[in-house]
Length: 337
Image (cartoon, helix red, strand yellow):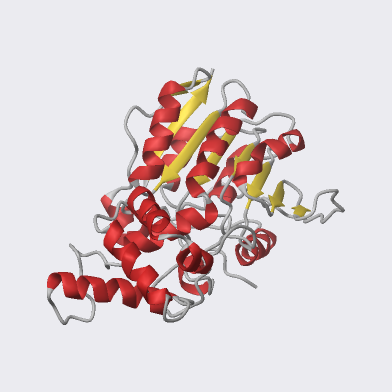
């Protein structure tokens, strides 16, 4: 049996999420980035006895972890004040699990949670699964397990196939680096990675692939590292740039392109605000300026929304010490009129 209290880290900014999203008994939520169900479990505790959640998750391994975690949730636990698992109730959040036949491929229904194995950009397609939608939450960060254990090449710390897709659809990073023109590569490196040397790195990639296709994260990272070694005239294995690995921005750009992440975010904001019930809250946790600008601009210009968080909420110093992946997180919330 899983020890759900110790196996997983607390979800990012859970206190702030609960304060700003303010889930109430009987309310229904959509968790656009279910992951291992960290945010969902806490929201379930505050929407009992009959509030429901739709959880979107493209990563099959993550959705499997979420299902197992929800099934193994303890009926009642005595916890220290430092732990956030405080609203399970004596009957448990999911004391019974009811798998049912579904007319939609990839949908598995639990008692109060239905996991949708689809991209959250398609949120509108599932709006009729809930009688009303009181909250929509999206945590746009990659999970630690997704980075370190997916085998899809999200990180340059291991030599893995260049995939970078969250699911199985779309264009892989391998196809991008081996088929895009120099100008196309330079464009995504500049726009999605905010890489200053976008043109030079694009040229180096095109030059390298003429000898043989670039198939792994290690091969790509070495091309980028070699460029910076020459530029900085150093023999260091990794010429760190202000504490950042030289391949960071390029990998970010390729991941965003492979998954059309910014397009998906825009679609989520547009359709999410449309299907949200009056008084409903939409909250987005972003991790880089490209995402945050899109959220900020949409909240301010949407005729349907009122901005709840005038400035983005950021994690506490204590949380960042415990979870460095949270350090760049920004949380913005708006309410539908």
